[in-house]
Length: 349
View 1: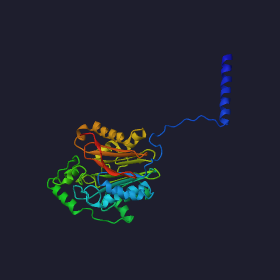
View 2: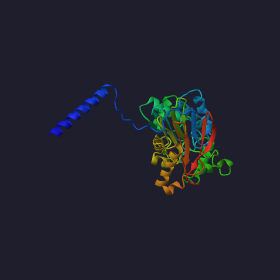
View 3: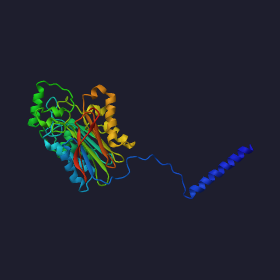
View 4: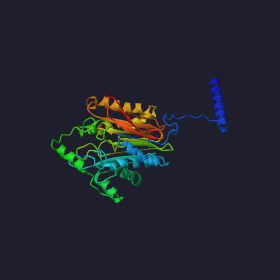
């Protein structure tokens, strides 16, 4: 009993001592785990990167905004709009190859530095789906609008209804109809014109989605992704490009990632979100992209050998990297110190 009394007395004294210490302003704190990849803005800002060689022209458009001190989200919208209106590639916006019924349907999404996001899917007749996606983000309580609803929203907000099927795309579709054989092929755009030097990796037919990520002068991030989807797809098919977390994901604490290639495989692993979370845990951008590619291989080893998927990522320090399944993927980077293309490293030689 005496021992118990002494124990209680000592406990009370200890608690009193803690109270005095707290009163004096000396308190113990428990530190939350730090985000390893957010050490503050990188010195080489702003910076923008995008997929494929048409990213060079897109990056130039984004740079006009970034170099003037503009926001990353404004820059990525301006940048990918250039590719959407180009009309000389078969995989984004105007001039994109149609679905198997002859309809050009467009998908796009955008994210800002405050977790704002907007997306449109299966949108027809509108030149700039990325700008419609931005209005979904800013003017509605929703994240995604699809099909006729997305078109109605676009027209109500001043967008012009246009024919997006170019003569070149229509000719390619009619040629495809002769056999009507649908099969996703590695870098299928390489083979659209096999008699041209442009079929080589990095040439004008070696394209897919354009995904773009930017860090502005303030170190804030924004991302955009836009495509006409897989050529001659089934009516209503949607790939990864407009799916937040699959084709694109940005987190202002960590960085951002985007994807290109066969969207079904990207969706299955929620690829871009996976990469951002790997960077949050400390992985470098290239390693995070590689880990995502290896997950695709692990889950679908037989499919992976015959498909192309590429990932591109950047962290808050401005460190960037990419990785893909097959050779042929490239990406463009523009900053104060560089303006060039880079080849993406690949899992398969």
